[in-house]
Length: 196
Image 1: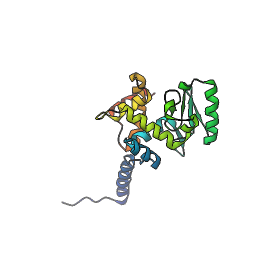
Image 2: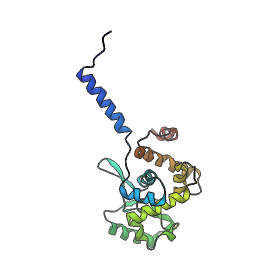
Image 3: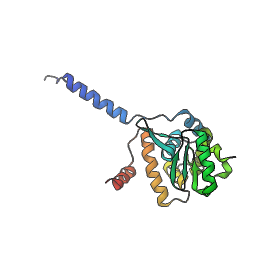
Image 4: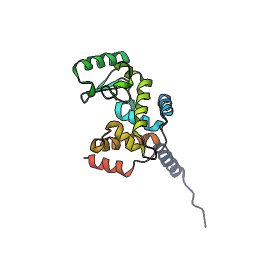
């Protein structure tokens, strides 16, 4: 029996499909700052990075990346070009908005609920300090043996409920991207619910 041979176009197609499958499932390594903060807190760096993508992610050069000079003031996202601009925006927001309605930095740390974690509000715009605080909060919300997605939901809303579940679904998409895995059935179901 003759062994079938592949022609050059078929070989190219097989190679291209194989490369696409490998690329689609490649793990994305979190930047060093995320790795350091996560290691210090004893949490997975992929979890911290996925939360930052959800909290402060913006599209740059065709990719979603966390943006350190991000604010959320009363539900409205604000992005600044520099840390000093963000600090000025934060100080202005603090004069007119309850501090429990202001989140700042990569992990969108809430000024009112986490005031014991910083000296001045603009400290939250230091990416390293912000990531350290976000990692601490995630660690506090995690119980040993529990899925990290549960802790991620409590990071957003400690009381749980549907807001925490929605947040878990959103972050799990980022986590799947970072880990190079396929979305879980819950994520796929959430996508179907929100598809037109």
